[in-house]
Amino acid sequence: MAIDGRAGAAPRETGFDDLVTQAAAAPVQGWDFSWLEGRASEQRPSWGYARLLGQRMAQADTALDVQTGGGEVLASVPRLARRTAAVESWPPNIARAAALLRPRGVAVVAADGDRGLPFADATFDLVVSRHPVATCWPDIARVLRPGGSYLSQQVGPASVAELTEFFLGPQPARVRHRRDPAAARAAARASGLDVVDLRAETLHTEFRDVGAVIYFLRMVIWIVPGFTVDRYRERLVDLHRQIRDTGPFTARATRFLIEARRTR
Image: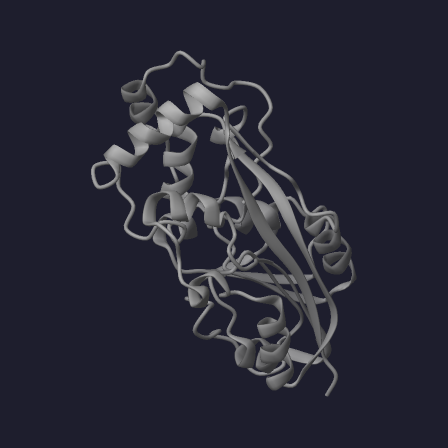
């Protein structure tokens, strides 16, 4: 997620029911969080994934974007690799990605990139992925050419855990420690890749009205699995009152950048 939080915040006096209605009606196709401008904000990682992506793409001959979402991040790259493909599994996102990317010559393939990639061995000299649900390291290594690289910004452990635990209560250590960068490094190495860069940061996040929380949980479905307004209405009312009385709900997002290379 990348939320800016500029203009357009909902007025503090907006009632709970109106905020719920606004958030429930907002479209959640693609991976575009612009609806949250002014209502939520998230600090950006210092490494600048979009900039790094642009640099790597400009140097690549063949490239693959795994779990492209609606194609928004890939579409922002000024110069794509000579041959670029993208995979996505959710039908609404596939249509959105195709509309954005096919005019630029990108082949959009319907595939679940966290379980396997429908490409021949040694096809790409660059594979990228921003916030994948999971990383299929053996297949990443398989489709990379010798000398090729995988570049990914991923969600780290216990990201926005404060929000998860507001609704679900304290989570066990096995849940809070998922998506550890050290585990990603070990998995990459076990698949025959050399990790050449690994960085992690904790980032300030805040939600300024309960509608922003509802929209975020509709988009990022693993934060509170099975979330619906009806199921969590009482806690949402509590959260609305808390924000109204004490200010934005704050949380810590975690991100890590990993770059791995196939050397042989």
